[in-house]
Amino acid sequence: MDTITITGFREVPPFARGLVRDIRLRWVLNELGRPYDVKLIEQSERSDDAFLALQPFGMVPSMTADGSSLFESGAIVFLLAEGTELAGPAEARRGETLAWIFAALNTVEPYITLLFVNDRARADKSWAQEARPDLVEVVNRRLAVLEVRLTAQDYLLERFSAADIVMVTTLRFLPDSALLDPFPAVSAYVARCEARPAFKAALEGHLADLAPVAQAA
Image 1 (spheres, helix red, strand yellow):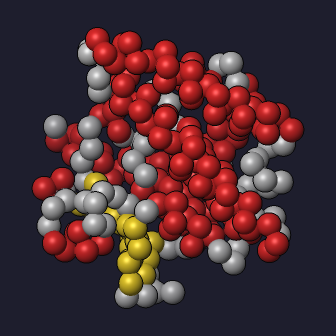
Image 2 (cartoon, rainbow, N blue to C red; image 1 turned 30 degrees about the horizontal axis):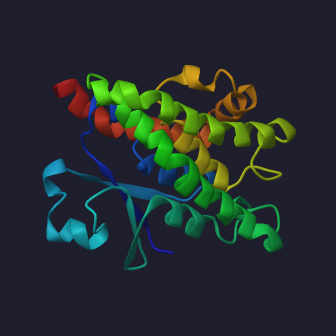
């Protein structure tokens, strides 16, 4: 495969620093020891035809390699993981990895994202305050399912996989770490995955790309 290039934003709001989904791609590529370049996108470029050809919704990340491009972080993570140990514990069980990736993106992330936006961007609205208990309740139900699974094992499958990369980067959107206090197994799981050198390098790279903008502000 030719040199991989992923996209990330050059500048993001303070509350989004360390959370933008290009971290998912950096993390999996670091786990695999694959070299990659990062193309930083200005917010003003999001509607440019050249960028929309890479990501039709004007978001990040996207990936370009071998003359073709792909968008959606979950799809890219799984594509990169295919044929490696990150795809799952055994060839016959790759479907489980894919199922947990979809669970993170479709079952867990939407409600965590709603709670994140509610708390970080809409906290001053009375309707947001009224909505919060219901959102927390739904998020807690998802976390309770994960708690049961992660009490029995360290990772979603028998060993660390691409599913954990997607799930942990989803859980990191929780707007308050105290929300994990009732779920010690989930909290330990997030800490265990964040302690991996590949994650630390991914986060450091993401923040370093934002640092010049932050210093100039």
